[in-house]
Amino acid sequence: MTEAFRPSIPDEKIRAESCNEKLSRETPKLKIVIIEDNPDDRSLIRRYLIQSVDFRCTIFEAETGTGGVQLCQEIRPDCAILDMYLPDLDGLGVLQKLKDSESDVPFPVVVLTGITDRSSNGQTAIFHGAQDYLSKDWITAESLGRTVVNSIERFQLMRSKRAEQALKHADRRKNEFLATLAHELRNPLAPIRNGLELLRLASGDPNTIAQAREMMERQLDQMVRLVDDLLDISRISNGKLELRKENIELSRIIHQAVESVRPMFDAANQAFATALPVEPIYLEADFARIAQVFANLLTNASKFTHANGHIWLTVTRDEGTVKISVKDDGIGIPVEKQGQVFDMFSQIEQPVENSQKGLGIGLSLVQRLVEMHKGVVEIKSDGFGTGCEFTVCLPILQEVVLPTANPKSNETSIANPLRVLVVDDNRDAVKSLAMVLKLTGHKVETAYDGREAVDAAAMFKPDVVLLDLGLPKINGYEACRQIRDQEWGRNIKIIAVTGWGQDDDRKKTNDADFDRHLVKPVKPAVLLELLAELQTSSK
Image (cartoon, rainbow, N blue to C red; front, side):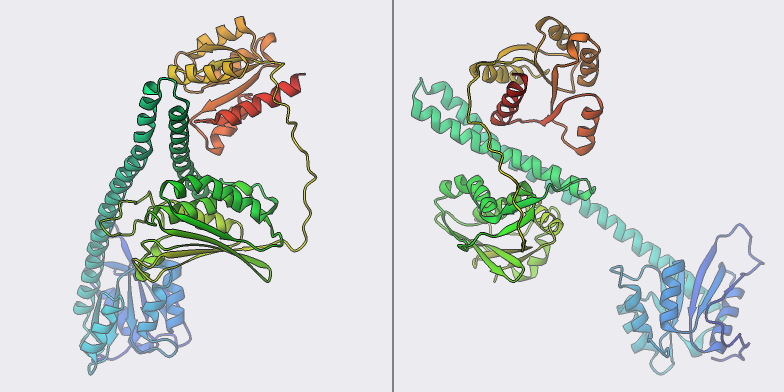
């Protein structure tokens, strides 16, 4: 440099110093880190910073690149002044280390270069994340202070623009997601509405009625699966999804997943083939969640494979693991886009002729559930038109202890019908559920608000109350409490039937003395099975 140096303590690696007292004490102090191995250069840079009329600062020093990185990570400075040539790590290496945990250098950096390589090294440093550069031979107190201030202002402006762009991107993603959600919900609603019209026009024709019913059930299951996926993603993101693991044979899981998706294969006339090992393979897994993984992969394969296409599911056993491959000859995914498919709400641009899209949550859910089972999922595709293959690798059980079988009774008699009170402010929901229960032999009364529910329970003395939570006049929690307060209401089975299905919601109903918590829409088979259990226990 062009000025005599004031020596600093040679073996001091990190130090702090107060700033220019001539400035107002109310001016916020800047935290500035000097990363420079030459003690004389550090001393001069420190003095120039203290002399600055543009800011007050606290100065921290490091003699090595590694020490400078550590110091910057600890204090998050407002600006760093970095020598390009350090004994252990050069300036570019320091910039790269600072970016290891973030996509960009998280604060402005001014790089110091030599006079002979000022332009080339300076431009290279800016390309790697620095804000500006200065030649050591041309530094003055004024130029250094001005460069620091300009770098900080430029950095803040850049961050502000990026934040604005991120908000715009997030808003665009939100709008795309809501539009896609509406599209995905309307898709099954259309055939459900058509099915209702078919039932009205069928004039008792059993074949037409059966086809309409099967179509409506299939579309309703699709809507329920969509909503369940959204809730599951929320639970996993909040760390509230708990696995109920047991020792399960893999073929049972595969069979369950295939049966849930087979109507999609049939509707698109897609050929489906499976290849499983002869010997059984056992996993320690949550049956429902792993079945959900393969159902999602098979659904994805069907959705993005043309009519009359082919889908294969192959299981191969390796030492200590099992690989389950779901492969199709559908539209495929470009190689450069494959890293995005597991991102939340990810949508890969597709050829115009392919109208299928989806919400972009299924594969993200697959990855998270597989990882919760200590497995991995991978994707392979050679690009558009070449098909796609997803492979799930899971650990297998070496020693298997199966639970003792406890077969359920095949008795389906309703010789002991229950008295059931159905409560919901949605009159269609009440009437339709009441009809199902009456046709299966139960005695039913209905109510449409919380106060009416309490009065009806007092008159009807039900065995079971199916109680919605969001009711007018008094809500379901209060209605449950008032019923429980009565002598006749203490042994009634009160079941919450609600659209709220998070763990916190279940805890609230449990704390409010409900016996069970069912999430809408409840499958009639599930409800009837629960009532059958209550029938047995009441005998």
